[in-house]
Length: 152
Length: 152
Image (tube, rainbow over all chains, first blue to last red; front, side, top):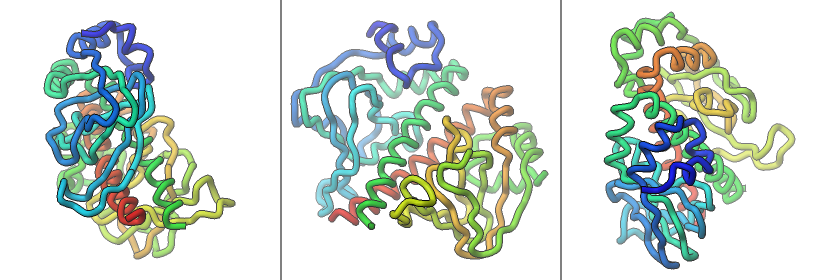
């Protein structure tokens, strides 16, 4: 587990009560990734959610798996941001790959345990789904800006 | 109001119970828009959520408002899909403009009333936020594909 105080620092967990923070902290661990680690793969089952503490992660889209031709940078994750939000959204499948472009430190949360937690405590579920939706919307805003620039 | 049966047809409301569908149907109305209507404007307060019944809507990003130079197509809404998902995600501000490119028929739901409903019935809140997050993730997937293609 990690300290609930560690989670409290992130806007992602801002709406959680002390007890809810403790419950999430119990299923979270701190991890490090060396530079160039593929943290998650496009289309793989989304089994983990991360909050990036230190480092820098690129999001890469290959349009349908490893054999595909397109291999484009479609976003990046900065410290304080969530990675792997698909772990809480059906059909629980990552929509891009993620690669550490610097040594990274993360909080890793087991997706299956987290989903079970949100079923049991629906207030926690609502708070977390609000954070997840906000994180996806932020990513969408960024991707829209990039798309508009690429098309301009 | 609209018929709860009308709402039940859409995957967006698939997880709602009969009572929850009735509550949402009470604050929903059917509307039509002529071709070329600007349904919502980028950066405006997100006060309404729509489900498109018939027609076709383009999403346009101008990168910072009316005076901005970029004016790019960043997506589209097909019948059965939700428009205005920002009405349920803080800071409740539309992230692109939307224009009817054909005559449209929609279900329109008042965002303030819907947000109040989700506070009172947190089970409904969780179900709706799951649908909203899934809708935003679908949009993100589409936008990623377009960005990857534009950069290829």
